[in-house]
Image (cartoon, rainbow, N blue to C red; front, side, top):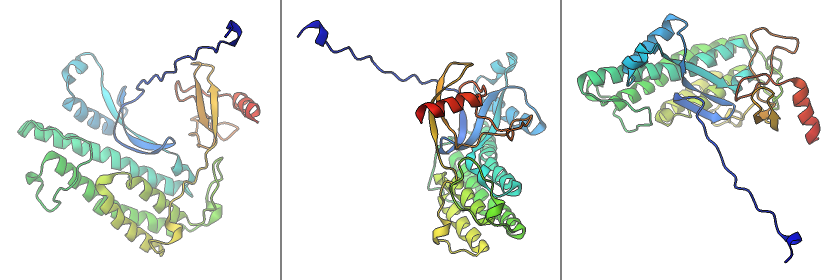
Length: 304
């Protein structure tokens, strides 16, 4: 055929992957709901951070070189759970943040302590990956490091969290409230009526992400739903994401010039300085720069 009929050559597509963060004890539900211990290179801000950072850096390979270079890695709990924003009140959100944060931080601290002790005695290390089949009735001294960590996680759910959450649910029941107690956010699409019930459902869906403690979470589920007075397998106990999703594709960032998809129904965090729009703004996930409302509105007009 002639030159006019020649098909244009197709370009080669590629995907470029670059790490932008390192986590341990990471729990992932979806892109807007995740949490864990994030390793940040910065100065410590309080005594608790100092204790955890010292324990981690003492265990880290090459810790002496890092200290000589003035660098310090601070393990920091990240609570990126959008579903928390849809709980009925500040009390429920504070309880949620505390429980889920401890499930990452306390287990991570225990891992470091076991690892430090094990290295001193036998040169063993603990893997944060899932381990199963440990006999919980054995003394810790007879368990491997992995089994010690598993036993600690199971005890945290079955005893510490069970007691703490029983008190939390009791407080939420006492506070009462109905549909009017729940915030109306950009992604709100469910008719929520029971603050204690929604708190329990959202706590359980996160704890159930860890396969090591599924049995303990099942027992906790029975106990908490019984406290509320709801049958465990009732239709109302089934969790549904309270946040709808509307993804705006290819939003351009004026700072780093990246084009990134933005879920407009994912509730952005409050700004420190507040603002006339409620203090909430969507930001670039690549560089953190704030998107102008006119830029978002412009993209919406384009796709309509």
